[in-house]
Length: 114
Image (cartoon, rainbow, N blue to C red; front, side):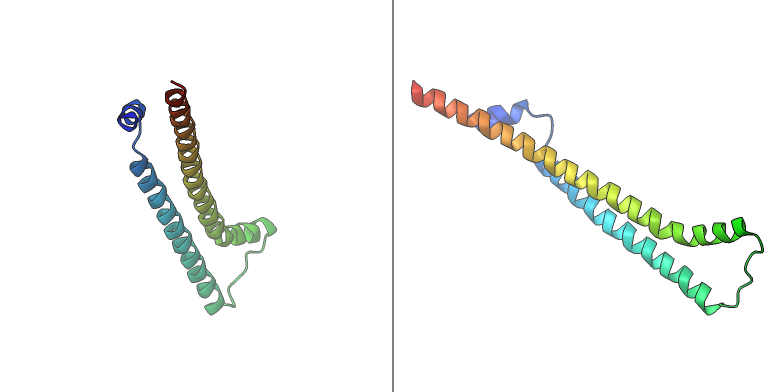
């Protein structure tokens, strides 16, 4: 009976949170792989066309390298954000479950004292 009471007090479904965390994890890995494949494709095209004309000015060279290196940087950024979201959901769920376990233990102690 206490389980039904505790379930009625929650505003979330633990299984839904676990599914969201799982899909955030899957999407994080998929994004990372796609960005790294895109980066590898860019490197392949630069290497296959190696005598490419380099821009004469320093800032133009920096913009060219930044354009190539931005793809793995964005991929890692999205990966870490989604992995952080996943870990935050797991941490919140652990804290909530731990808090409910303590309340349930307190109720059992009160009943045993009676």
